[in-house]
Image (cartoon, rainbow, N blue to C red; front, top):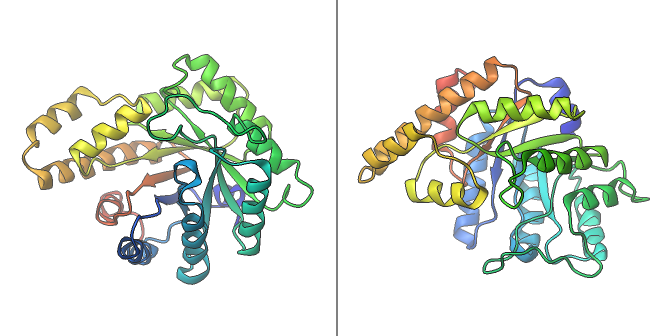
Length: 293
């Protein structure tokens, strides 16, 4: 089922995000985690795309197996990084052949060690161009539902919230069906983002992206990468649990549960969990929210 339909029929639609592992053993563990999370009845699972398209084949294979073997609706990430139009067209063809109907269309981050995004001569500079390419393609214009990224605290490369929102408006105008936000820890940032988006004429579902604090150094790294503010109370807890990994994870699960409870009460279209390929935190949050298992 396309996510455009999922967000119409299911509230809140719960989705999970995985990334392609680097080893066969870790990939097998990912499939085991996906099977465990299937008991939570997620609406779909998305699979990310590596820098420079480095995990493209893995993304295709994992997305295919999650949908067609494990039996969970899936969405493949697709980026503009180091890919020509012909290469992107090839990926679209492979996704369609596998029955994948959902794409998360992104510009993508610059490769490690580079600070500036550099498109190929026959590639795309922005996610809006990728969305337009798919929507205007003679074969694939109606083959996929498209989600794009939104940034409650503005993209790290564009801290002007008004200008950043204009980029999002363009992505939706070009044909995106839904917006999935970058992680955030302050729900006020999400609610403000949605209010500003609606005033700007963006009417697509805006789905909050949640990443539970399960590892202190890891969460700091992700927050720095995406320009996400860590609230003082969370910083205090991170200092308190600096030598207590289990305590930090339990705190993170409790914090995310409170976040999700408030978001669901406000009527969000869904929750998108950045799982980091693990199941424990997500399962515990489900229990805390009394969602069906």
